[in-house]
Amino acid sequence: MAVKPMLHPRNQHRDGYDFDLLIVKSPDLAAFVIKSPRGQMTIDFQNVDAVRMLNRALLMTHYNLDFWDIPASYLCPPIPGRVDYVHYLADLLAEGNGQEIPHGSEIKALDIGTGASLVYPLTGQHEYGWAFTGVDIDPVSIKSARQICDRNGLKIKLERQTNAEDVFQGVVGPDDIFHVTLCNPPFHASPAKAQEGTLRKWRNLGKGHSAELNFGGQNAELWCPGGEIGFIARMIGQSMDFAGQCLWFTCLVSRKDSLVPLARLLKKAKVADFRVVEMAQGQKTSRFIAWTYYPEGERSF
Image (cartoon, rainbow, N blue to C red):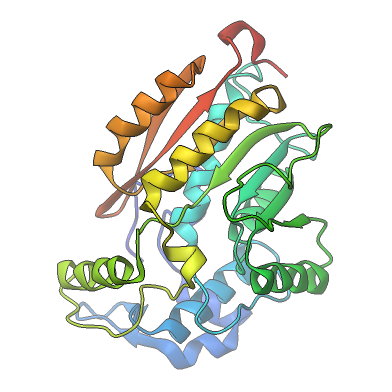
């Protein structure tokens, strides 16, 4: 197994995938395992079914799930990178907890656009025991997420967002308090841009052409008017109305050149603090932004 030292130190997948162990827990994965040119066990990451089966095996093996599945063509995100986000959020929250990583259901997390896969609540609840609320605008995603919870006996609150223009309104009640929000926003501004991004990624990886969108995905998962800047701009603007109800607002940012305009928006919103947290994952560097309206001396919990 190839060591992945750039993943977060607490990430269970730093040492790569133990396919023998994964197949024991999820035997159906065996049909999708192939040998790399170096003779190592892997899968064809252009094969949506193979990626879905790998995710199922990872979640069953490392996160104690008995069942996990998503509807065909829905976004099937890579587990190691997603759980890295959760670990870095735990580090962020530790700043207000005497530098101790917070565990337990008293920590409240809001997952915006939780998706059919429910990856963040599933991994975050297992790793830290946090209480998650997952919201999504797509009814099929909410139905899939509920099925995953029901089949595994998990208590994760799920809310349907009915207004595409709202991020927090309608799903965050007046008495709700969260320690952190997280979000994997739709990165592209149109379906054509989403397809273009997928083809560019496969070319960069030397994989040639693929007719499939990278790891699947529906419209609301992949694109929205204005792309990621448009979506995060709405999130920043609307976060001002919920400034006292969340300690840290956070969101993934795909494009590094999105950071400058987003920083201007955060300055305009008069946040108390703003961070860019980079996460190196193999050959890729991803990042999230985090902002709070609480002064430094008022962030303990």
